[in-house]
Length: 202
Image 1 (tube, one colour):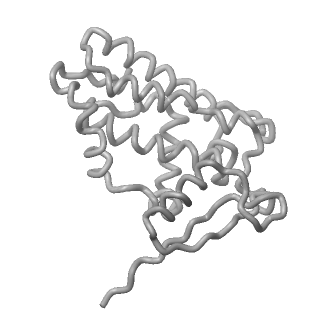
Image 2 (image 1 turned 180 degrees about the horizontal axis):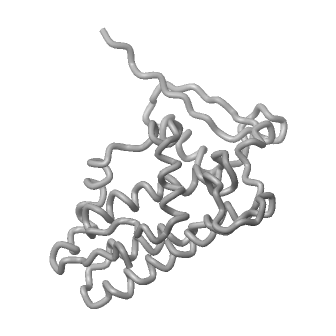
């Protein structure tokens, strides 16, 4: 007989590095698991002992911040007459992210475009953990429902996405694409009614 899956909840540790810290999102999961009477274990993570994951530059943490917001407005828009404006705003957010990825960071040699692998340098950081899952959803949903792919002209963004696809930490944690499509099936169904145009190659 197969054993029940073991569930481990990793949550932010408090200042003492051991007890449960202040994190509403972790507490929410903690409560849900408890209410459902699911067997699980708690592991507190001392964030101060993991500086390697922290971004060196605060700008890296906010780069691409508006992409998912503009994407949501674009893909969920039910009004054909507003589609062009939503598409333009979404593309502008992608361009801004591309510009950040192509602009050399202070520790680089200053040559343009930057050749760094990720948002903050050549190592994955929390900034990438925040952004890459959202970009994955953006890619899958836009390609399937809007016939949209990231323009090749956005070389920094394309480089970033290609580098991410070489990382097992990213690729092995991506959900199945069919699950993503299913999650957006109802909210993105309007695109088929008026044939959203691809902006690839602009």
